[in-house]
Image (cartoon, rainbow, N blue to C red; front, side, top):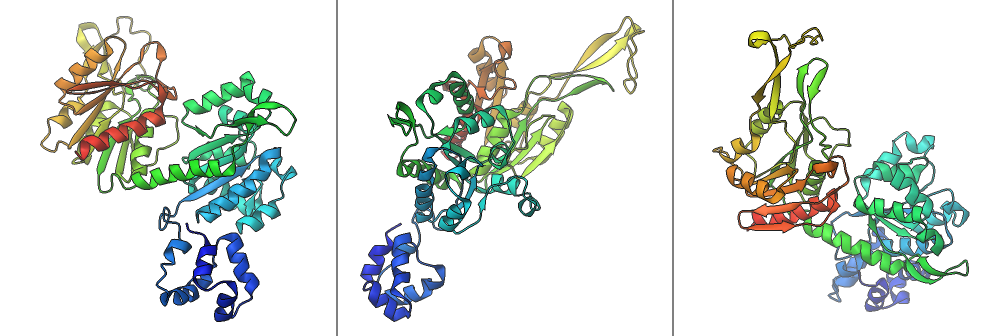
Length: 473
C-alpha cells in the first residue's frame, strides 16, 4: 500500500485538507502517522481526489489484499524481544490485514494488554478461562478464523507445549485447535536454542508442517553472542506477506472442480467383537482434502474409522467396511478428480467349521469351535471400477502401500488399474502408518519422481501442484 503521507501531499497538504474537511490538522497528522485514513472519511477524500485525477484506491487499499479478507492471529509470548511485537502489529495493520492478538501471561510482564489494544484498536485476548470470551467458545473461534497464526516471539516454552500437545492456556490451546498455517519466530538465549530438548521440539514441529522464521545470530540482551535473536519485524512480515500472496494465488485454483477422496482404513467384521483392519491413520488423505479445499475445490471425503480431527472439506462421509466405501464412492460419481488414499481391506473373512458349514456371525464365535477356519471373500476394487466406469473422472490418483519392490509394484498397479497418477511408499517396519511424515514415489505412465521425506501436509501441497499441472494441461 502506498503511504498516506504521499496522498496527503498530492491533495494539498495537511492544512488544506483540514480546512476543506472542517477538521483539526492534528487528525490529518495522525492519519499520516498511522498510515491509515478512517473509513468514515473515505467518501470525503474521494471527492477531493476527483479534480486531481488521483486513484485513491492505491492509497486506501493494499493491492495484494483488496477484497481478499485475509486475517492473522498474532500470539505474543514472554521475552525481552516482545517489544518488537508492537512493530509487527503496526506493519500488519499498515498492510490492512485483519489482526487479532493473544498475549500469554509471561508476555504481560513486558507489555500490557491495554497498549496492544490501543495499537490494534481491538480487544487483546489473554485468558482461556474468561466467562465473557468463552461464552462464545472464543479459543475455537480464534483458532479457526485466521489464515495465519504467527507466534512472535516464540519462546522455548511455547515450542515445548506445542510439540508435546500441552494446552494449559489460551495460546497453547489455540495452537492445538487450529487448521491454519502456523509460523513460529523463535527468540531465546543461544544456549536455550541449541539445547537438545529445544532442537527436538523444533524438528518435531518442522515434521508436522509448522513453518519457522529462523532466529538470527548476534549480540543478545543477556550479553551473550549466538543464534537466538528475533528476526527484524520487517523480515517477519515479508515472510508472512509472501505466504499470503501464495495463498491468494492458489485459493481459487480448483474452483468448480469436484474432488472425491477416500481416506483411512476399513474394518471387516468377523463377528460382533472381532474384526480385521490395518494401521492407516487417515492423516495423508485428510491433509490432501484440506489442501485441495483451501485451493477452492469442492471436496467430499469418504473416510474409514480414524482418531484425528476432521479435514477441511465440503462433505465428510464416514463408513466402516470396504463394501460401504465402495457403495458411497460409486454413488457420488461423477466427479472431476478421484483420489483413493484409503487403505481398503482386500478381503473379508468368512468363518467356517467342519464340512464348510458357515457360522452365524451375528453372535460371538465360541472357543468350542476347535476346527474353525476362514474362507476369504474378495472385496470390490474401488479404483479399478472407477477407472473403467462410463463416468470415469478426468483424473484418478491411487496410492500403493508396499513392503518390497516399491516402484515395480506401483507401476504394475498404475497400468493394470488404468490410473493417471499413483503415489507409492514403503510401509515396512511401520515407517508411514500413523506418522506425521511420508516419503513417496510419484509415478505416471512415463515418469517416476522420488520425493524426499517430508510432512504429510507438504506431500499434500506438492501433490496438489502436480494435480493442477495434469488436470489443466
